Length: 213
Ligand code: ADP
Image 1 (cartoon, rainbow, N blue to C red):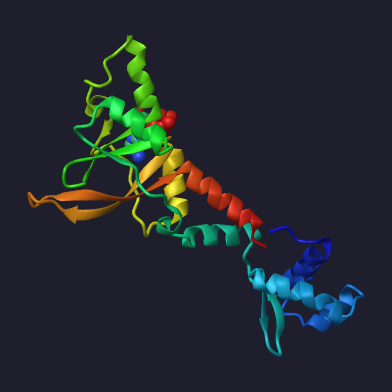
Image 2 (spheres, protein in one colour; image 1 turned 180 degrees about the vertical axis):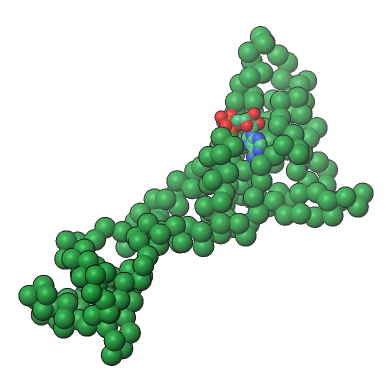
């Protein structure tokens, strides 16, 4: 959040002199208490100052950046994710390209007949196919180009968006499947795909957070 010059001055007074009453802050700034009231309310609501009755204001020790960080760590992937776009593992690369265009999404998740995650196909994977010369995309199965389990980076709906965004950056991928661990029919574990978290979701959230006051 951006603070006004007066709010910065109040923070500094409280940081060096707290706990301090609103009268004392007003005296130091040669202003009236009434003038300061909206600023004190904003600084308290933002979590930068804390107020105790009969004691006064004191500095919460939280910087504005730390407050933003705390907020990001509280927002769960499940609240910002998109619907997953999946193709079956016996689809052709041509089907994958069509799905990408029809669904307007750059990353597809490949699932088996039980709907469990097998791999990821990105735009670049499909472009790579063309490098070796013309191919019959109807005949080439998607499994040829996809990145396979267990090398898929995933998140869960209850993870924080910060954790998910960090994975996108560290692993240099555009999207991660949001998954839930389930028992497969053969008794082993598998990952059911419940959503998609992409750089677009993070950018949208960033814009929303920037709009809120
Ligand atoms: P693009 O092809 O649009 O640049 P990415 O940067 O997301 O897409 O993909 C780069 C490579 O990483 C591709 O080979 C893709 O298969 C793989 N990939 C994409 N998403 C994941 C993921 N969540 N986990 C593991 N590998 C992935």
